[in-house]
Image 1 (cartoon, rainbow, N blue to C red):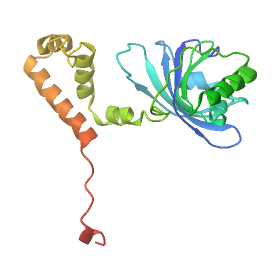
Image 2 (tube, helix red, strand yellow):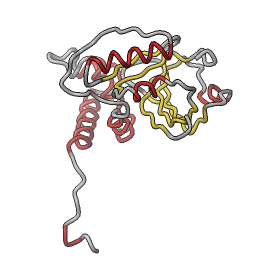
Image 3 (cartoon, helix red, strand yellow):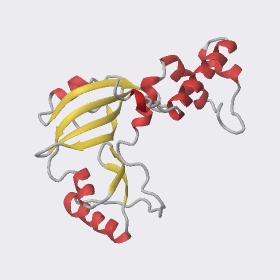
Image 4 (spheres, rainbow, N blue to C red):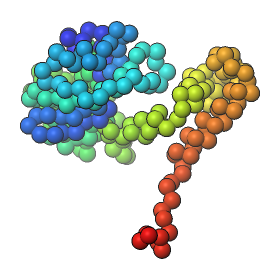
Length: 221
C-alpha cells in the first residue's frame, strides 16, 4: 500500500484462483478523496484492472471503490496459505501494515497448524480472539446479496433506507421519527413515507419473491 498512500483499507470481497499465481479479485477499497483507481493500478506490474465503480457501503462517509482486478500474487500469498490449511476465509482486509482476518476451521489443532504456517511464512501472527461456533459463517463472496440489493434499488430508495437506518428508525424502540428523517433529506414527510414504503416493498420483493418456473406443458414451446 506504499504506492497508494491515499488508501485506508482494502477488503477482499471475492477471490478466485485462475492459474500460475493469478487471482481474480473483487476488492472494496476505502480511500481518501484523491484516490484514482486507474492511476493507482497503472504502475503495478502484477495487477490488471478490469473494472471499477464508486459504491456506498454502510454509513461511512469515506469514498469506497469496488475494483475487479487480475493480480499475480507473490508466493506465499496469505489467502493461499489459508486455503491450503483447509480453513474457510470469512473476512480478509489489508490495512496499512498488516492483514486482519477471520477464518473458520473444523478443529482447534487445524487452527494451530494454520497459525504456525502463517508464522513461518510471514514471520508474524497475532491471535486476537477465538469463538466456538455451530456454523462456518459467511465465506468470502457471500456478500453478493448486498451487491444485488445495491444494484436493484434506485438511488432514492437506497438513500432513504440508508438514512432511516443510520438515524435509528428501524431500531426498537425507534431512535428517530419520520419527521426527523424527512428534515434530514430535505423532503416533505408525505414524500418520505411514499419513498420508504416503495423501498421497503422493493427490498422485500427481492428477498422473498422467487422467479416462477414455466408450466410443464409450456417447456417445449
